Image (tube, protein in one colour):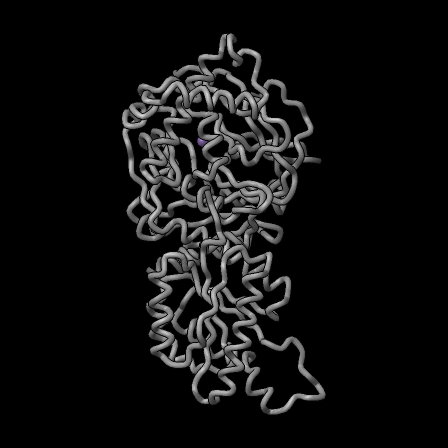
Length: 499
Ligand code: MN
């Protein structure tokens, strides 16, 4: 569903005519070589396209203008091999709408001590050429990512890859459509927000369809499609006794499959990248979509429960950013705490909808009562999730701005059997520690719903926030509550002034 190699990043080198044809020819050859290496680097998941060296305000303006309208171009990597007087860049940078990475590199890794002469110095000027470019972007108050290092440096390549993944997620949001079945869960604050502002800021739209529109599609699902999907459930999961053919719950499995096919059809027909629903509005549906939401998330759709469109959209963007990496990204909720002072942890889950892409080991397919919503018992997938570094991310609407909050966590292997817990589960320890991490999250106003990632780092999320131009709050290894509370206060002042 998501192929990052189809997306392009343009490699643009800045220079000027001052140096003469011979030097410019060498600049071009060097740039081609670097672009080729970036394109081939395993860390960089997108296609890197070499663009001819820009030497005048007109050439710079033209390449920025073309990047803006090129559908597959998700950003520009800029590098000043020589000195490129930066007033030439003002016009282009003013109109550039795509993310920019400033690669502060140099063609030669080492100084050729025995050979270095003035010709070498004239060709290898990035050390100061990039400073002129950097000043201009700072003077214009432009968000960008600066990566420093030789172009074969593993760490630099990793950072370029991180930025490219974030840019792919950002690109995916532009023009994206998310559908909301029913409204917000009644009286809930954090899942609500300004959808008009979100569309202006983030580029995606959220529109509502009455549940009846979905029910109509669900009711038209054919028996042949139903049988195929039931077979897939049989092949892929450990079906609970009663769900098998002839069992008392088999009809529940049929209804769940019908909902899944109907939902997928609705999403495909409307070209939606994700959805939200609420257990308070299910008129005409047999059960709340459980396994349907879990599997659709596993296939790349964004989702969040209770009308939470912000988290649904965030989950989708995180899936795009993490495409092709081991591990998954999915909808999550901090559910229950383990307050053992020697081993404090959070149990993350949801009442049904935990993303299949987070599963480790056997997945069982079960049916249990839900306790709320007043519908038939919903079918769900139950599984554990892997240990390792992970993060939770949440976007909240602060009234005058959006804030992205990220908490780095250490996921923990689920050691207990949990025979009575009828939902999939994840265990983690928040960084820097349980008490500080949870307090920081609550001070920052982070939601109970999050996008949980096993394969993205806080650097992906920071780059993503920078493209959106929104506030970014990191809770991680170095978080100190005194500093965090001040950061939140100072940011409030900043966003009041910077409107
Ligand atoms: Mn919830």
